[in-house]
Image 1 (cartoon, one colour):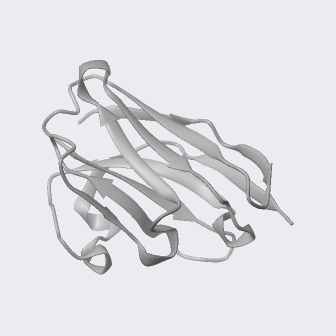
Image 2 (image 1 turned 60 degrees about the horizontal axis):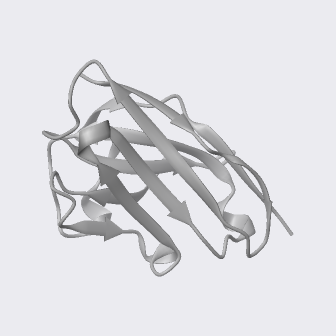
Image 3 (image 1 turned 30 degrees about the vertical axis):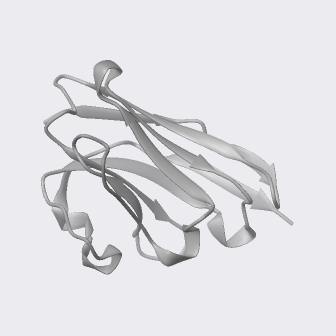
Length: 127
């Protein structure tokens, strides 16, 4: 299992942008489906986006389509989440995750599909 460290969170105003980073160590991410999840206060962790091994395929939850972009750099063991046009409802702790399953449908992804997790980074969007 790879170890994951999340970074890049912060406080941003509505409409602003942030780029989250996930740094992997202890192995290569090339063999993993990588994803970002988020958890808002008082709510369950929810799927945000995922990217296939080669980076060719991506899946997003509906509420972030067109605003968030997931990407990966296998050579440097990095995964990113570029977030633009941020909204107050995007406020949450964001965590990257590594897994082995790919689904076409965003609703199919659950935390059980991922075995390695980052510690999370706080994103706060102020109105």
